Amino acid sequence: MIWWPGAWGWGAGMVMALVMLAFWAVGGWVVLTLVRRPGPVDRTIPPTAEGILAERFARGELTTAQFEEQMATLRAAQRR
Image (tube, rainbow, N blue to C red; front, side, top):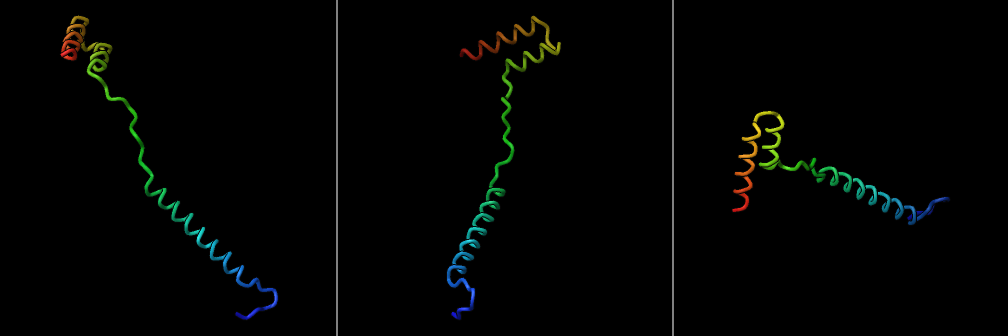
């Protein structure tokens, strides 16, 4: 290698190689992170049979007698 006045020699080449390697490593990490990123998670709790009955009763679709009868039927079925 020809040594020019003010040249850094091998040190500059090594530093540039390490910086280029770090640049591509960070770029690859960013791309992989964006590609493998999970979608939105549905955290809602699925409605239970009792919850559905309570909602129907609250909307006025069921009378008190119907609500109590169906709740008793559900609870009897759960005990089996």
